[in-house]
Length: 230
Image (cartoon, rainbow, N blue to C red; front, side):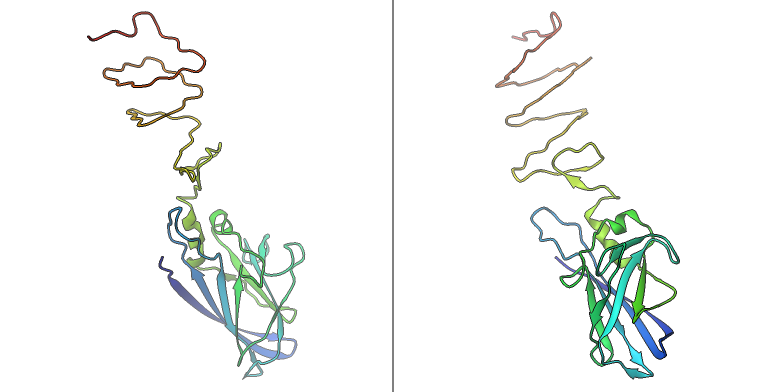
């Protein structure tokens, strides 16, 4: 399976407790390609990279940085935090190398990232806080991480258990398909089939080959509804 990487760079200059820090934003999103049941699931990760300058020089000391996703560029509700909880976000200790740092949001060192965030919200914004100072404005996540939504078809998830909600029909591990209700203009069944509660009204069958019909609870047919063509 191929993985496509896209990068978007922004620059923001701010003052952090007397330190002049320049933070270069690089968002690297991973495309989640349409996959079948035998394909391996790619990691649900957004890699965030940046560079810290301390008074014009590359920062080398550890910085406490928090990363929070919001549904609004100014206020709104928090959707994800790299550490802590949505109610109480915590910082992550970042040790830059010649000013360069990288963190995998959703990776093993951070909280897991729910791909449904990008399914349910059309706009998502990243807020970064360095050393207690909030960078402003929040940065909108570009289209690439929205590839998380590729696991859905137009927002609809696949299921083999026939839930009440709209879903894409998917076989189970045995290749079976379960349907609550089915409407078909032409139905061909090969092999064994089981019908739980079936109602047929105003139906005409011109040709039917039935090798083995098993009726569990009873079968009612109108008078003269079955004729022998022999």
